[in-house]
Image 1 (tube, rainbow, N blue to C red):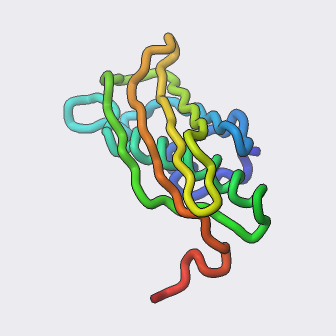
Image 2 (cartoon, helix red, strand yellow):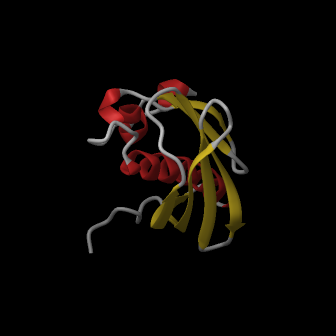
Length: 136
């Protein structure tokens, strides 16, 4: 699966462990490039990872319902629970609801000991792939 990781997921060094319409799991190693000035992982990294895993799952769910459908993010609410400086992290996304037009997914980021570092909820819109990115 990992040869297909691109864009932000690739920039963050995410490794796709499993992916389905029911759950996506990624892992990555923290690098100094992911730190904010205080030396802990930047909140934007957590937001980006949470949006990535939720978007991957929602996209799989949307295309499973209708092959021409994709999911695009509408809202990301991420809470930072505990700071971390180093190590390997894991993010797991699971569905809250997978509706016909919208989906809501939640994801949790944990460290190697299983402590929760961040939690987030992402709301997504199911749209046809050929209209998802057209100019208005």
